Image 1 (cartoon, rainbow over the protein chains, first blue to last red):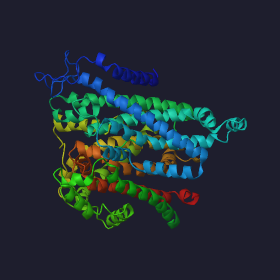
Image 2 (cartoon, rainbow over the protein chains, first blue to last red):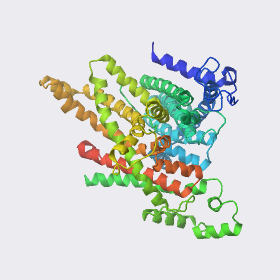
Image 3 (cartoon, each protein chain N blue to C red):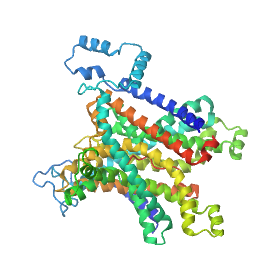
Length: 275
Length: 315
């Protein structure tokens, strides 16, 4: 079977689970049961319980929500801001181009996790800061990509044709240039989604994202670390959930990129994930 | 050659300048008053005002920036809010630990990725080639903190053969130092080596199809010689750039790894500063990481232009 279908299925299943979390999860994710702490997997608790007796499966299911919500909103913000800036840069050129691209160069010069930390410092820890942090990390790549798309398209015949037919600048930008550069931008959106899932989880792991007792994957991995000898699944299962989601997003993004570049070996952009 | 180095240094300066403004200006963007934070909740308005005057926060912004910058250039990064120690000595104390980690990771990743990439491209065994591909996908998808926790579980908790935290300088006790470094370096290398392997693999694949390979083959050069003298050499060159770019990011990635293994490096220092809102330490640590990142990139670019004259003349 084509791994693409499996990846699409997994990504879709994660999204659906997050959406339907209160109905799908077998238990309340923050309900404690101090008589059954750090249990291994059983029929009552499929993935076991944590140090407060909370059901790990239910917490993973609910933990999908902050991760997916944060990541999708961050991608939307980064995409709309980044693409707009890139289009302005590429279409108008001159001083605007120089200014925008220098700022983007600066943002690209700072490693992703450090840039995210910088944003967290300014906004204070919390889920919405984590979201903006991820968005800021994503903006420059979108800007660079859409700028290069516009630059390569603007002298093509169909663009010149609509220009001479009297299309306005707005129409040219949004109805002619944008749709024709959509492919690589969509691939970039999925690449960023994978990075966003990682960054959100990493920030929660470092205690700078979703605050307890609300479940989030990164925070579960971090909290479960102290109980590895009693209940390894507490830390490892949510970590595996993150890895599976990122892997499927990687597969989808690779395939879209392959579709638009047609070259199996072209690596247009190495991932920015910090080791 | 000198012209090229000068050109690259000139390219780095604006980025450094913008970075210095952002890092310095950070303190004005954060919510709340840093002076109030420093003096605690019991400070009177009079005390706040005099502290502000002492710190020079009432001077014009440009003068404040100039003062900060000249301090930084002289190695004075300010005083920590949390423990009243100079930030530069706090960082100097932590930097060796992080350097152990980053240099170790760079070496391990370099030594593993080249043979892995060669296996992945040229091995006649299909399972082996697929194994390399599977490793790359996993390395790029698995978050470093999962790998770290997994390694702690396997080698620290389950087998109890390796320490799961702490750091010993390599010049104090070589054996113990290495034992303490194995898990953190393995955690960081798992990703970094995968990244390098992926890049080298695609680079090898495209070099193998180049025309000079056909030429060499038609001249009767042995397969071994073609791989060693032609394909590998040309494929490794662009790898150097990727290597340099990402070695710089290892300093930032150390934040996560150091927090898994209780490793007393600059990453931990930065993270604790973020949690305690110790702004001078944050500024110092972030500045250090950005400067290290840019310097490593610069060095690698210069090295690259020495190895490949095409780069120099293209400029």
